[in-house]
Amino acid sequence: MFLELSYELSENIPVYPGSPREMYRKNSRIAEGDPSNTSVITHYLHNGSHVDAPFHFDKEGIGIDEVPIENFMFQSPLVIECNKNRSELIELSDLQLYEPNLHRADILLFNTKFSLLRDDAKSYADDFPALSLEAATYIRNDLLNVKAIGIDTLSIESAVHGPEQDFPVHKILLSHTCSKERPLVIYEDIDIQKVSGKKIKQIWAFPLRLKGLDGSPITMVAEV
Image (cartoon, rainbow, N blue to C red; front, side):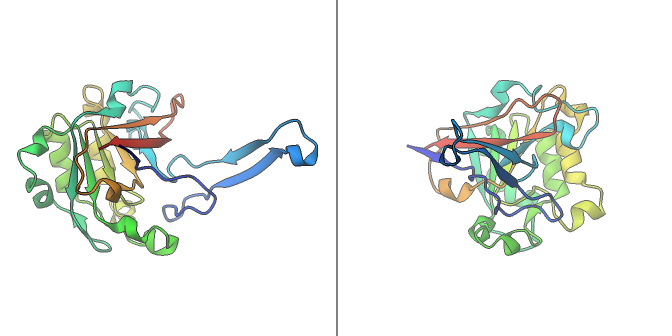
């Protein structure tokens, strides 16, 4: 069975505090005498279910078009069940509960269950759970099979402390000093609750190949 873990895009989706909103407009419509239906969208690359490329937080990092295509295919997914409340951090101790599977995984999916609030855009965007710097450093330096991480919130990093501290979690995960040899990408705003408690065979989550850019919308599909 296949489950889609990414959300549909619309003008009403919740967005990270301060981010531009989605804008859609019609270009042509058959009902108005045009030969076809066509549309134009204005899309911010970090709205909705998306992937961050190393370039997002590193001026020397590679763009989403340069990440090897196999880095968006995962044969050993691991869901980290870590129920968190508003503003709580996912700590190293939450990861260590999953030894030894942690070292075999090629993608870590953090299920904080905060996605249950997504229908209330204001609550979902307000001080959501995030990853601690200690946990991020451990993933980058010690979990050598991990190609990606994903979370069921608007960002892997706190909307309160990230800007205050100059986004250290994103920077350690996406740093070009590591990513040239072992690129790591970040998936955000993913519906991980759908695969909670299920045996995942594999996951695909491909981006648009946007040349030189910092991220992309994605469709993430899990085979369970």
